[in-house]
Length: 252
Image (tube, rainbow, N blue to C red; front, side, top):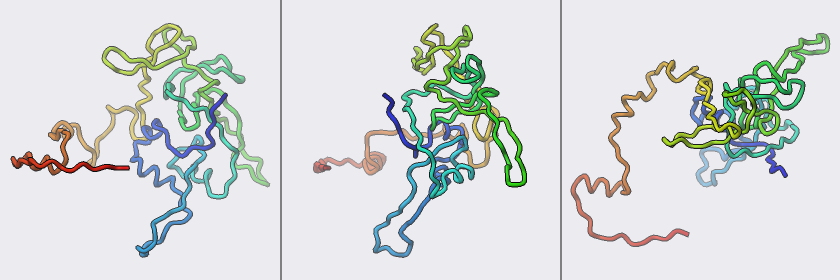
């Protein structure tokens, strides 16, 4: 029996990683507020009525196309998803298609839409769609790749023998998580393309800007966390001893 979810409101981790944008900016770009307590009335309780559930598509959540597909009043067909506990598909992986006219063919994942359990395989599962169609113009047919469900429409390919295999996450002796083929027991390495973000192809080619935190700044941080409050930390630095025991407090 499938556990279903109708629509989603949370942007997936892989999408935020690819965006390389602050999470606050993504939330602000998706925000649709219907009503909010006006400013200048401190006697009123601050409340707002805003959209909490969105329909995710192949468009990025911070784009105008995403806003057009989630405009207020637009009725869309319900979406049912099967929750995935551990995600194993990344951009650059080689997968084999299990359904459709391209069944049995292998290709490279070019895009991941984790919010819908989708992957887009480069050059496969294509369809024709009409663009620019109007009353006096027939439009143009454009070939585009349709998304595939990772639950039952694609499977990862083991690079050791180029055959499909089920995969699970395991840990190495050093404690690093790796994907392991259940059929051969071999490690499926992470593709280099998975490091690509909206700003750069790989982390080594990224050019730092003036507002970035450099590696030298991170190495010079001397703060060491401890089980002390801010006041206790200040008192310790000033050599002030406190013998009094604070009264116990209870929270319900």
